[in-house]
Amino acid sequence: MKFATIENKIFDFFIGENTKSYIEKIILYISIFGFLVHLLLIYLFQSNVLMIDDRYNLLSSPISAIYTPFSFILVYEIYQLIFYLPRSISVYISKQYEIITLIIIRRIFKDISNLNLNQNLFTSSTNEYLFIDLAAAVILFFLIFLFRLSFQKKKSQLSENHNLLSFIRVKKWISTILLPVIFILAIVHFYNWTIDSLFNEKVEYLKSLNSIFFDELFQTLILVDVFLLLFSFFNSDRFHNIMRNSGFIISTILIRLSFMTEGLNNIALIIISVLFGLFIQLIFNACEKKNLF
Image: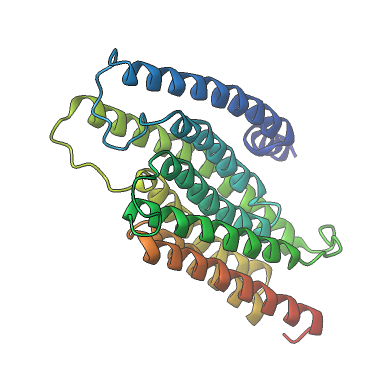
């Protein structure tokens, strides 16, 4: 009983409602501060007061300052993903789709600041990427809308199902361990990128800022999804449950692969990933409704 109390306190500290509200406020303040600092850096850079090799064009326009607060919004979305993992697998997967969509939105803000109006809007490669991302954002928003609609409302059977209670407990421990792991991963990536950008002139610059941290984030989530699949066998060995959890792993892998390419290939992999997850969820719901397995 004493261990259960300590365990609940650990869960509340990392993934409790109060912690979620506290982190939300901190992220809001940091986002505002980061936005103002980014604007200041842009002003100093364009006034030739600050000399920086702006390889990523983050100081080219005040619009690009939106990139910074949006990055912190993504941080909060990542916390929400961890927060909802023990509560609902469907919401947890939906948060993965929301994160990759917000990454595209963040990229749009950056691309708009680099929009070349002196060339034909549809022939410039920079402009072309912008319009591809705009179309992708709308499509993904609609697919996430459909995915959210597909969630099945189930009556709570926690008190009657010991296996389900054990599975939720496992998911809580995974979330509790995952939070500091991702936090450390983010700090390490940000530190390495900052040091390399400011002091290492020979560093090989990445084609996309999105490949910093987020590729390894989804690599970590793939491992988490595999653990969830394995532990889910203790809760249920029904075929449609196995198919749903396996399908979500494939969906996460496709998102991870999208960071390894650019342009249409990048967008295609992301949209296919969300479409695949949506169809898997819809078929799962039909199986549940008909009680086929």
